[in-house]
Amino acid sequence: ETGVTQSPTHLIKTRGQQVTLRCSSQSGHNTVSWYQQALGQGPQFIFQYYREEENGRGNFPPRFSGLQFPNYSSELNVNALELDDSALYLCASTFSGANVLTFGAGSRLTVL
Amino acid sequence: AQKITQTQPGMFVQEKEAVTLDCTYDTSDPSYGLFWYKQPSSGEMIFLIYQGSYDQQNATEGRYSLNFQKARKSANLVISASQLGDSAMYFCAMREGPRAAGNKLTFGGGTRVLVKP
Image (cartoon, rainbow over all chains, first blue to last red):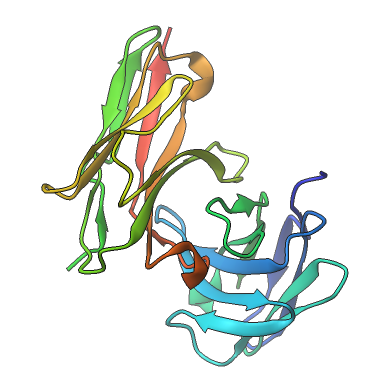
């Protein structure tokens, strides 16, 4: 097992731009979820993918979208960036039906 | 109403002493899971302990134990024999519904723990 790795670790964008964040899950983890953690707050659920399809979404607008690939990697895409999108974005993966999520170290996005 | 409430924004604890972190939750679902995660400054969320709503015994994992009081809807984390490496943010989280419901966790606001030598 190699854990969950995320890239990039830090990035800076300007308002209105688009960003893609990437996540590589542990082999066999067929479920991936993404969380947004604003500074000083707990993480908030964005959405979940199972077998390459979205099957759960939190209170986030459609400009937040994702993809999951057969090789256990996934992406979070955010269009039309806003200042409030500045946050740590965490990827978490697990086996379907398992209890525990394994989190990556996150991608810290700053929107200027 | 908040689904997960952590009332202690920050705590100091002396090395080798025990510390209790409070967590209360709110759900009407009879099946749920409660989690504690540790987040050091590096950002990664590290799983510590899990308690299922139907579990009869309080969960324990090494120096971590969960004081589960279902009627009071509380799930406090106890860290025994604190170590300097325990300094971090601690988050309580809940999954509503059975495991098959997926991986949507609702997190509290966290408690920052600083262990003093």
